[in-house]
Length: 471
Image (cartoon, rainbow, N blue to C red; front, side, top):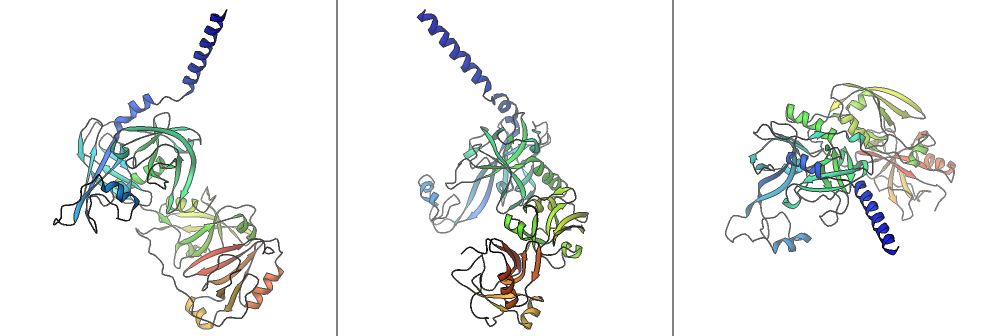
């Protein structure tokens, strides 16, 4: 009886283990079938050294310097203080005649690019084009009959779905790592044109430019960057959706460059408080902080304070959606735009302009000194009215200059800011005098939030003060 019971327990355990094993994902076929289309990309560039010369790109005060210098030879004294810097990345073949996708940062400033296949063949690659804004580059090698990847639809990815990366982390070619989709449509600083796929797939230096596969063996993204405090993988990896990368590569293949649409506006996120101030039912869209003179937006009649909620048939859920939508619009084409303006929706037709290769930086300017009006007001600001000379110089018809900001000031204000408009519950009032402004503040309900349109240097922004009665 005892032996029979033990046998039953062992059999049950084996059945459960077998069922659990069947539930676990199996990546073996995917790795075997898709691995040959993934390549190693190595680049060489001449780097001029400084201070302690060494064959790796770290400054002497970098935390990695002490570690790496133990294993890297110093440059022989007396030789020219420059060296050949080599770096590694990954890529994948998208056509049998030798077109390869990778990251722009992998081949940036490279003097020579080498592509190594899994069958050990090596080719010198030509950089057809690279787009730094999306971090996508297109390479071409002189070969034919190559294995190619299949493409999937990143729009059908679900958070929690298994995904697989193949690449060359730290030079270990054709390494396979797996994880899940952590989030979709992530916006990262300085990357306004890419709705990143966030995963927890182990990605390290050398994986850049490699493919991210779904469980069908289809490429859904290009592994681009990680979030890390140490320089290594910490569970946050980001991939460029393959549809974005393919649109970029098609332009690179045709012309060697990417053409993007532009409106000529500076925008900011619509918070709950901003939505309340503008009388909008929910936080959505992109708030126009300023409109560039002579831009397509100005010519179409777009105004500061407009909230753009739709371009053609595409909804603008948040401010980061707008650059992507407009950037994908063909320059010179007409687009319909819906904006929220002074408590009502308005439709505008705009002729989309073309974004220059490098947007210039606008220099900041501060208004001239004027006489403060006296004590700080309810917001902790010492204000004065613009003089006639200042209004002429700045091209403004009204405004109040922030002369000083007390330690108890409410909101993000700085000396030199010019307050232009007060917005509360959808109503917008131009600010023309200190007394007028203080009178408006006195009438604001203590539980309400107000928003001020502010000119800071050459840029307009919106500052919200929450709960006027709070101290």
